[in-house]
Image 1 (tube, rainbow, N blue to C red):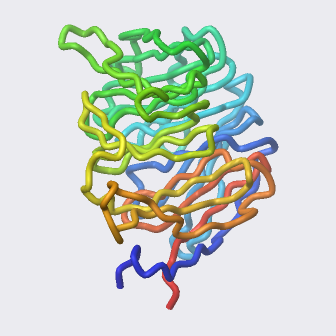
Image 2: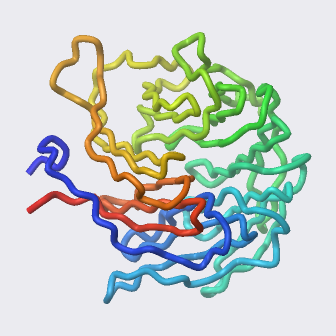
Length: 326
């Protein structure tokens, strides 16, 4: 059965996870634990929680609480590619690096430099660079050194407002950032160690007309999706160094999941019925009131699973499965 084209799909709510005492901002699946899934969540309660699935029951439980390190909201978290390090970005202007040492998480490094709230953190594909961004309008690139040392490689200035998210391209050392200034910026290194903005995606080139909240790539890195306060998702073709909106007919074999302040989840799929005007996307499924308050993050699980996790201002995390009707 073609999972995508029959439209005969349902969204199953697997479990609701409680424990955070304030809004849950974001979550990150550990890329190295696909067989026994693990993810981290971060919250306005200043903590990070590590969640693990019990193989026998397939139910989730909180394995660890990382606390008493950040003094304000933890806004973003990201695992290194090896799954051994976890980076957490906080409104206290710091980014903490945690290492899993024999099952216990220890804070092994603290990155300081941003003037105020750090909004997002991201590792590159090889784990050699870490990027952070802040309300101070800057993006920092950190080089990962031996012994859990991190050295600032570059401070990127170009956004004119709060930078909401940074995300490395999944296969190349090219960095993307999105901002309250309504743009997405593409950053690359010039071969001499200097990083530069090589492209700005704004309203003048079919970009967004309001704050760009987040962006995500498919696994191959040839498509990117951005979401905005202008109530749209935009799909971009990526040719690293050259990006064009809606100018390619290669199919994106994937389902885009989105959540919003209307408390709902929506799933979109490329519509292959006709490509006269280029690719179009259809609404595959929607779940109204998936949470009781704003949805802040939705993330597909690793591997070939159809697991999805969502976080919300209601303080809860929900685990979902997108399944075909039998």
